[in-house]
Image 1: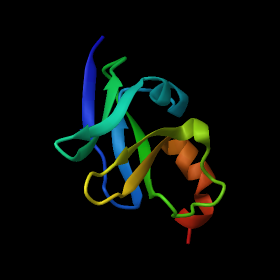
Image 2: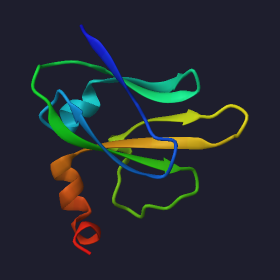
Image 3: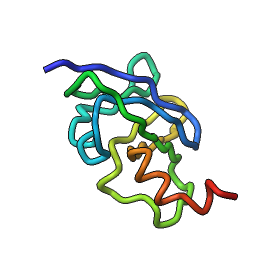
Image 4: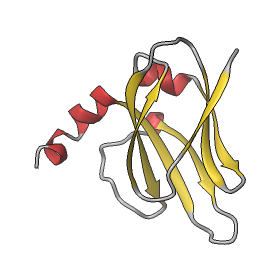
Length: 108
């Protein structure tokens, strides 16, 4: 097993990342943990191959509504920031899943 990590955002929004998986389902299945390291949110994942594909991580603060476009199965973890009480929730989608689901917002 080989574990890598990436930093995650601390604001509502979308970030594009490259991960060593083919599909969103495969990527989500290989997430080891989402947590804080030195007060920075990070994603640890099990590396499965050398080729990388495009993915999207959506960050949502508690109380912010993204409608019904995200599912519990796409949720990969949440972090609580000490001292501020803010909670960030992270969702992982393949680039293809993201484009299909959010096509109307992308094409504005």
